[in-house]
Image 1 (cartoon, rainbow, N blue to C red):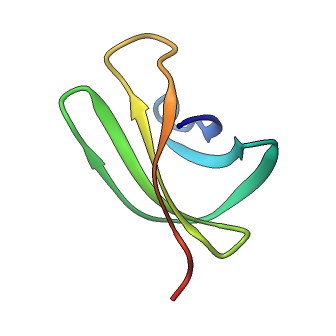
Image 2: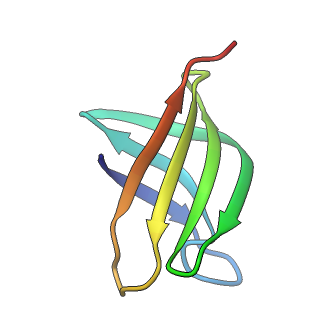
Length: 76
């Protein structure tokens, strides 16, 4: 599922997500729980201000590549 993501850009562009929009709702990223790199993407596991955990994938193989929602988890 495609998602719009705004990122913090420090030492590099799109360093980490800070806010994202999904189905007309906007969520603030409260915490980046984990991140990992693939050959063509970077994936972030984040906790949003609604208390839920989201896994967001950013395709890095192309300039201005899309973000997508990989997974969603309600808090336990």
